[in-house]
Image 1 (cartoon, rainbow, N blue to C red):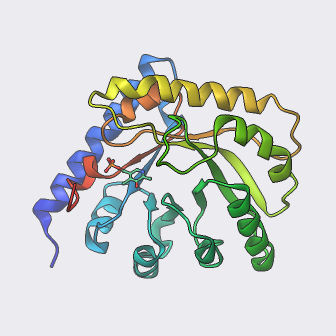
Image 2 (image 1 turned 60 degrees about the horizontal axis):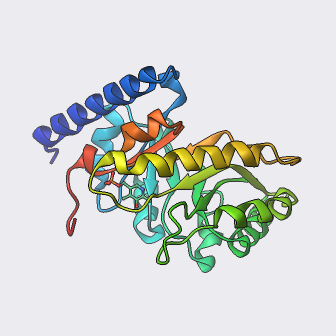
Length: 239
Ligand SMILES: *Cc1c(COP(=O)(O)O)cnc(C)c1O
């Protein structure tokens, strides 16, 4: 049974989000339409995702393949719905992810990229990906180092079934949203400098950064995709 009160909350949260994204873009003279909202749906049920679709959201980000598959099955690509893979991707899951997700945000090594390219070739597709960069240099976090990503690019550029579209970053947690700004700004500067490399196919049009806590700052710093979960669907179980 549909929870209409929940649906109203989700619709209201989404409309607030779109408004805030627009205002943040306008503050820095960017086109609001240059920013796409990816609703992060880990632990979110199919019913509540449906409510977000009704409220206008079209792109959903999932972290775990096992959780995503039944949702994709249930919602398909009805109404132009698209799925992005945003979580840690294990090598052995690549085969199932490739072709099912419009974009993989979390390619964090040349080894993983190689596997994506191989599986995409098998499937006869070209898989769009972002390179995850560990922009805060955190010991515990996955991702290329800023130097590592530059070194990897010529190799990645030669992978015919891999389409690198840009970067994804997750700054270290900071108590204030403003604390993330230097990391977002560093990510944009990195993308700008990588775009000057002499690459054949790779382009750096996309910058996936900003979550519930700091998406407005990310938009001010050049995000083209923000990945927002709890500001739409409420707090998750275990934070
Ligand atoms: C959960 C998650 C998000 C969204 O986080 P919120 O703080 O709920 O907005 C964004 N990106 C990734 C990779 C996530 O795992």
